Amino acid sequence: MLTVVKRSFVLALLLALALSACSGLAGEPRIVSTLVPTAEAVVVQDVGYPETAPNLALGIQIFSQRCTDCHGQTGQGDGRLIGTGEGQIAIVPRDLTDGTAAAELTPLDYFTTITDGRIDTFMPPWKEALNEQQRWAVALYAYALQYTPEQIALGETVAQAQAIALDDLPPQAELVGLTDSELLAQVAPQAASLSPEDQLALAAYVRTRTVEFPEMIGHGLALAAESTEAAPVTLAAGTISGQVTHGTAGGSVPDDLTVTLHIFDSTFAEETLETTLDADGRYAFENVDISADKRYVITARYDERVYGTDFVAGDPANPALDLPLTLYDVTSDSSAIEIGAMVEQISVSGDSIQVAQVVSFSNTSDRLYSTDQALGPDQFASVQLVLPEGASLLGFDDEQRYVLAEDGRTVYDTVPVVPGDGHIMHVLYELPYSGSLELPQTLGYALSGQAQLLVSPVSIAISGPAFTATGQQAMGSNNYATFTATGPLPAGTDFGVTVSGQPQTQTATDAATVPTETLVPLLLFAAGITILGVGAFMFVRDRRRPAPETNLMDALVRQIAELDELHASGQLDDAAYEKRRASLKARLVEVMDQD
Image 1 (cartoon, rainbow, N blue to C red):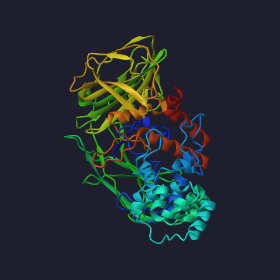
Image 2: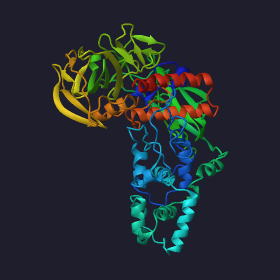
Image 3: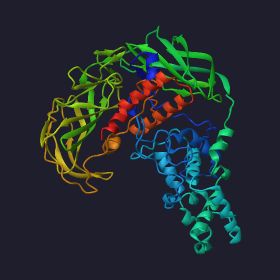
Image 4: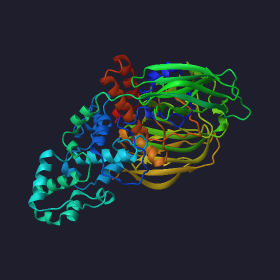
């Protein structure tokens, strides 16, 4: 995956975990912090159910490394990232040890949530970071957190007393889709006459017969810690090579182009090597130590931008890495940019109005879109959005990706737009409101797709020349009046609206506004927009090697967790940690705290 660094290399690395997914648009790589757990990865074909008994030893290892910052060491939802303090997440995860809450759930429900995430609770999707076998392992471990060793022992006693044979259980494909009560009804119908306590204990015991390493239940974290101490690091001498090409018609790769290999270990310590291209435009680094605990990336500076590949984890079993790199000429012609989709949420509450706008851009040319307007070292203006007069911008750090112009209204994106790729930008702002307000807006770029307004509460009236009322739409527990404008519409089209009316008392399904902590992900969900997270650099992707996509807020949760993990383990000093945390706060936490 190809990238363009918009700052100096070292600074971009320092900002890696500071940037939230609010700035993670198409044009940037997947999140580096989503590292594969230390358990040996097993390549398996996704079939939708476990083909063998899920391994709880693997499950607890993954849980302890990837889940405890939010779910807590014991799964009770008391992780260090959860709370109402500075830099914390206010949404408390469900207590996984609560058997009552889990009574109507199945292991398949857990697996689905782990795979796809939950947009409303900040649960990130793990389908790209963990293979199916790993997801089933951690799903069954999390499901089994509702059981205790004492309960399992009682269940074994009950099974013996009732002469319940458990040698012929249903296949895994069926087991994972059963609640505990459904499981008992199928394998031990006589359990219906038992007390509720004995039924729960028996169900716990039966589940232990469906997994490997059931002894992990109840005290697996301690066992996992013992089993993962001092894992040996395997090295292999390998080659990192690739073809450098030019993606713009008529463009050519400079003969004297310098290619740099950056190697980062788990503490983000960096080693660099440089080389030049051969006559065929290829580079090669020979005899490179390839290790599973290191990440490798190639960069090259061209036309005042630094391009690079995605980060690749080392695999000693396959020590030859092919990392192709594509360069582009730069254009500042805004006619190359189109708006493929736009969604805007307008919320009126009391004497203020809050507007969140998410815009998906595309570059129809074969050149990288980036203007010559310098906004900082190696930082140039790209696409932009203009706020109404008197608007107060919320949630962005003007020293990072987005730059607010001196006029206080123009928000510049500093990430270039790649030819043929999508690129998402969002702004969140508010204005005073006293019953009626003009929100002037002019399309800065041609609209090729559809724009949608979501208005809450539905008692608020909207009028504008470009928009047509299209009914109501439910999102979460809220109802929204919807308005739609459909392209093609040229740049310069009047996109302004007039907002009028007062909020009225809402019902439970007609709430006044989306909570700010779920505002942007809901907007993206409504628009059908998916975006990428932020890697260790701000890069432009190679279209030939698309990176897995991840949800906006899911990406940020993982970035926060990884940042705190690095700091807690002493791998990140206080100054760098505080700087990155402050930036994350500016990107998301402050937005969450606005409500």
